[in-house]
Amino acid sequence: MTKLELYYWGYAEGEPGKQIDMHCHDYWQINLGISGKCVFRTEEEKFEAGKNDLVIFPPEVLHSLYYPEPYLCYSFKFKTDFRLNHRVRKIESSDFMNGISSAIRTIMETTFPANYFG
Image (cartoon, rainbow, N blue to C red; front, side, top):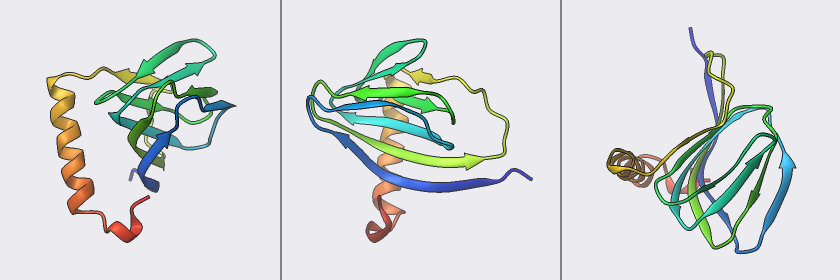
């Protein structure tokens, strides 16, 4: 049976000019952009994420963040024993991702109790 442990759900945000140095963690992290932009850097690549972009970070992948402008996203951190590809993925904003973002917003605002959010 696949095990999934959710460690965090809520908002993550960054202020303009803020830099977070290279780091990694032992859990998966998914960020879904709500507004603004964030520049992510790994040892292999650099990319920018914004509204309705989905970024998936596997455990143990070094990455840094830079916020050229205010950035807000939904963030989910979890561990799983399910075998997943250990490569950073970015899924660009699209009509499909706009629908996913809207569904997640509805779930986050109506399902998760506010006192446990974040």
